[in-house]
Length: 318
Image (tube, rainbow, N blue to C red; front, side, top):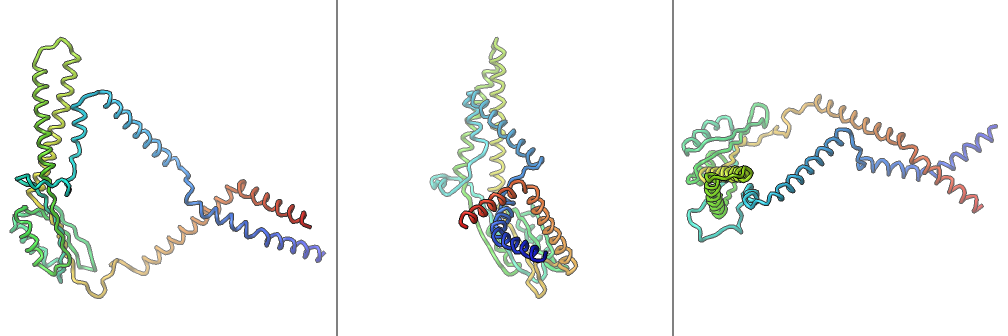
């Protein structure tokens, strides 16, 4: 009896040796390709459906717009997003240049809280204002500040100089963007739209027996007016950007011993986070184990077929 059990154990051991590598390879392949498999949950499927619906709606709108055949509408669509100024748009022959200035400045001081009032008074003396203010804790009880300053363009360099004198300068950058060409192109578009608007108003004032003609002219007039208002808002925004430059100004405390990336670190917090990471890892392992069980009808027949083939080949050799 013991000999029979021993022989069966030996046969099982031989089978394991012959197929363990292959089984491990298949399991490892399944484990590896698991993240790449795209299982769509109902929420994901709904999102995909919504995205396809939005794309289809956009295509229908484009076809409808093309079928209208209105040159004014096509011109208006092109003028919705003004071009971005670049070096290739610079024209030295243009006068009354429109230049947008911006800069970044960072200084280091012993105590940013003590210098905050000085910064605000300096900004006020430059006829500038603070459009945004952020603060964060670097270490316990010590804050760092970030200011977004809008300063008159003619005092931009003066503002950089005065703000840099409040502490130790750590970094500075300066940028100018010439939008003169784009500004004048937009002005020309506005003039063309206004001329078109006057023509449409003249058509509206005439008598017409066709109601459809009047409605068509009214639609065109409304579209042209919307484009004029949009372009005028764009020009107003550009005028504000040209008149007031932006300075991103940050005040950092001097580094000291004990400054760390996370001032709220504690052993208890790290312990909780580690335990949570362990739970997530165990959940991932359980998910893969469940995956192996669910997909057993696929990989088990493959293993059996490979085992039968190797057994047949072994007997043939014998």
